[in-house]
Image (cartoon, rainbow, N blue to C red; front, side):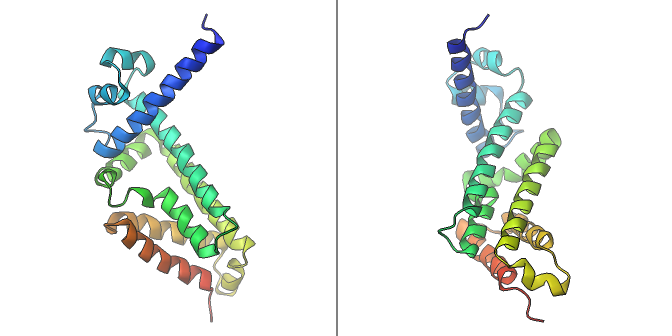
Length: 197
């Protein structure tokens, strides 16, 4: 039977492997990444890697869960930044969620990774999206922005979904983080200015 210290060491080792794998998957995508690539990044032999993760899919799922947790935490932290104005809080949340890989080495494989994530961990991806939309809708309600759209028949949730859809579209068209931020800021300004009908 494994002692507490051994379990902690194993858990820490799995986290280190997962962190290393995340970087490899972001750089090369799921399909082009081999178990040899993942073992090398983790500083293990291929056989050593198999002791911790039996398949590439299992390691990808673990990396996806860890990355999802980090992204959710960063998006929530941005939304909760009371020291920033609403526009910056919203931009920060969407950048944490989707904008971080634009114009980086990972951006070339991000679409393939998202497709793989949707097929292997579709529920997780959907939950992450809904968590962000709900958090943004709550922020728009708390700050009174949603009230300005009520007469037009547009809810806080509609506004949040619109911002999410815009951000998703920009991840496919913006070539630099600056372009993403500039275009996303326009969408945020439109939403936060309310309707003037």
